[in-house]
Length: 191
Image (cartoon, rainbow, N blue to C red; front, side):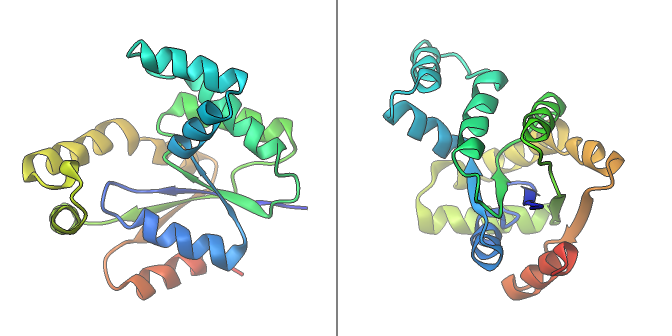
């Protein structure tokens, strides 16, 4: 069975959270968020979770191989899943290569990278609006918001080239109503 594995990609404020909920429901996909995985593995006190907790307690970043191991565990624990939306991972070429190797080992792979593209001024407006209603401190300062967008552009956006080289990149206009953006995403996936 071919699984539908999607990397939902875009800068902060592009609408990934809103759209991933719809895509999960529409296509019956699981959601793989690295933050959620870390918390679950730590709570379950798995060997990877204990390793991650030890590193985080020491103020260190959890290395890619630990995160990829957690993803592999989740994939192996969900053999009947129709596929997954990858959220917040991969963020670097090394992570994308490790994810490809992991999926390949279980006879699967990334189907598409759906890259939501939104103009910077719209992102700033959305994030400041979200900050006003959600109370998230990282969405309340225009300076911080613009810094997060720059960080995405310099460190994460180049990953589009990795998936483009594989013929898996689909650029999605992320401006317009939620329904319009959803329609563009489903068109790119093709039913």
